[in-house]
Length: 359
Image 1 (cartoon, helix red, strand yellow):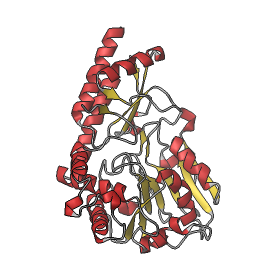
Image 2 (cartoon, helix red, strand yellow; image 1 turned 90 degrees about the vertical axis):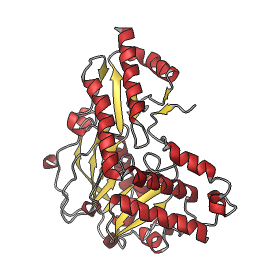
Image 3 (cartoon, helix red, strand yellow; image 1 turned 90 degrees about the horizontal axis):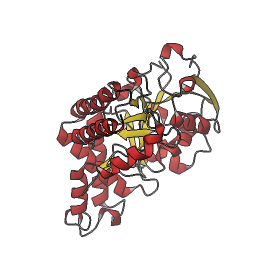
Image 4 (tube, one colour; image 1 turned 120 degrees about the horizontal axis):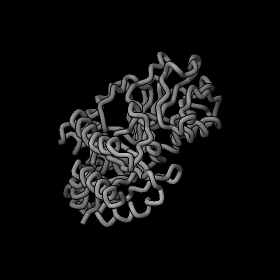
C-alpha cells in the first residue's frame, strides 16, 4: 500500500508514470533492453531524449531562441556553474536573498566574482519576498539571480522581477511546471528535477542563446552551456534514466491538460491547507500571505512539545515525511503536481482530529 508522501524531494511521482516505467523496465518498446542499459548515443535513447525536450518545450512554450539542457549535478552544482557561465565578460553578479537556497547560491558565487546582494528577507526569518522597490540597484551586473520558490521556508515569488537589459536567472527547482510562466522574461531558468519532474540526479537548464558565450575560461567543458548545447547535452553521458522518467512525467502533464490545469489544481490544494491553518491558533503559518508557496507549506504547532506525537500520528494515518527541514524545524507539507487533492484533505482532517484531541 502506497503512503501519502509529503516529501520535499526526492518527491512523489505520478503513479501512472511509475507503473509505466515498471512495465517498460526490462524491455523498452520491444528493444529487449531497459532504458538504463541503452547507449546514450543509440537511436532508442536519442529518440527518448528528443521527445522529452519537445514535450518540455511544449509545456512551457519555450521560445526557439532558448536552449534546453538536461545535465547532472543538481541545483547545488548550478550554484557554481551559473557564475562560471555568466561572469566571463563582467565579474559582477547580483542576488536576492530569500532563504537557505539563496544563501547557498550567494556563497558559491563569491568564489567566481563580485556579488551584490540587492535585498534580503533574513530580517524576518525569510518569511517574505522583498518588494523590488526596496532592492538596491542592479545596474552594471552581469545577471540578477533569484530563487523563485524556497523549499525550506515556503516562500514563493508570485510576480516576476523586472531587470531590464540585465538577464534574470531563476532557480525554479521546486515549482517548475506547477504554473504557467513566460520563459521570455528570464535569461536562465534552472533546477533539480526531484520535485516536479523526475528522480534526483537530473538537472534542467533553459538558457537564452545570446548568453552562451559568456563563460569564464576556467569553466570545465562538461559544465559549459555552449558546449553542452552544441552536443545536445551529451558532452558526457547524461543521466539517461532520469531523462526517460522526466519524459514520462511531461507526457502525463500534457495528458492532464497542461500547466493551466495543473496551476488551478495547485491553487486549490494549497488553499485547502492554508484556509485551515488560518482558521486556528493551534497551528502557526509563518509566511506572509502574499508570498506563500503553493508547493511547500511549512507550519508549526503552537506547542512544539507535541511535534513528535503529531508526526507519529501522521505516520499511523499513512502520511509520511511531514517533518520540517532541520534548519527551521516544525512541519512541512509539499504539494507537488503528483499530490492528489485527496491527500491534502486527509492531512487537514488529521490536523483537525489532532487539534481536537489536544484541546
